[in-house]
Image (cartoon, rainbow, N blue to C red; front, side):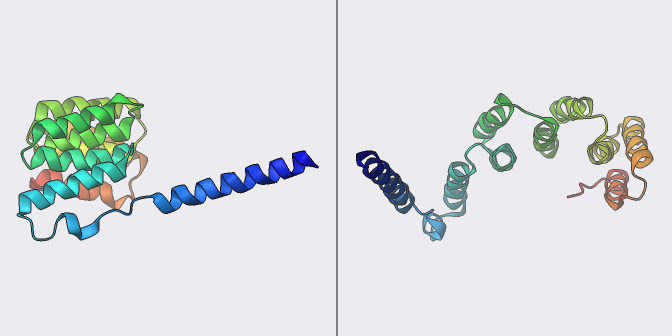
Length: 175
């Protein structure tokens, strides 16, 4: 009988502990961290909160890194890029990092990550098309067209492949 009471007490304590922990979670601050501040301070506050909420999401951390990097805080952006790449980085992570460098006009760095993306998953026709369009846009038409040809050979009815091709030929970024 005593073991039944002990088990019930333990279960109740565990439930109460979870309840207290859930109730004690801090609600994100919302607009209060940004409202009325100069744009740079508001943007920085938003990025800091986004980083807290992103935790270990490499996709979100890469997006945050991109904003830091492109808005002039390359050191903080690079710190987050390193964090994205420190774990089990995959082709998607490498492609997102490549996009940061491409957007910053750092084509040599972008190419390193884009090439790594293609090498990681030679069957990702979406990556081939997007990266192919980028290579065309930066003046490496032959390399870009080779990647687009692979993408279109695998999936010729994908509209996004043609969007990326058009963006490359017309010198704009597709998003």
